[in-house]
Length: 274
Image (cartoon, rainbow, N blue to C red; front, side):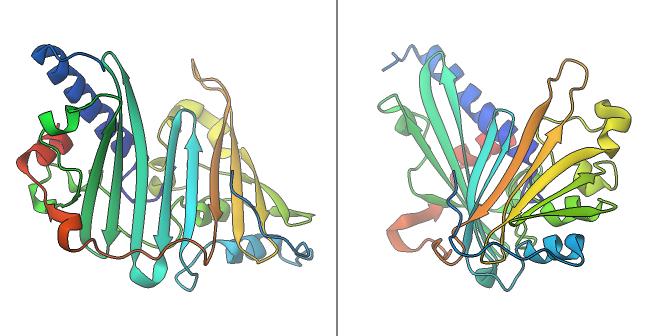
């Protein structure tokens, strides 16, 4: 569940595709297998306008660097946002069972510049065999078949929580920093495209009435928002969760330099372009 930092579905597809490519190459070569803590202090007082208060708690460009996590079914993304640098870091991983190894991918974005780092564990020598550097790789977006597959920095709200909250007709302040409302996931294209495993169209009318709860920490920052997704077809009901935390404690984002970085080789583009 993300804003356009590269759709979550696209990023997951890249990781899964890359893992499949690696697995196929290994087999054909006959290679052997070898929660966020909230701040302490007094809870926020009830607000006269709960919806406005909740929207005000969503991260914006004035906030310091912070971490975030989004969970949607089996998909999990972790990252850091640094509004002052217009910077974003996004990490994910995919596991291959046959052969058995794990591939982690991290994207770092500062304005229009983007770097990618790949880390393969569980099978010694596999990363070298695939000619994928262990350093940060500077990507050229013009060499990507679909540049929207990789992240861009849009704003300080990576999970698009403000857009979700705005669709609620009313928001209830339940006290102790807890809020509740009902979101309309059909309200606009950005929200429809925000989900990895949720088919908004398949939800039908239920997509217009998705309950959510949110928690605002004592520091006034949104710490979590949870959507209660209903069942649809063969899809079971599930929770979609976004967490924002470590405001002012997360590392600032800077461009990799020196021996940390190199230009992305052809093998990186082959992986990303599928």
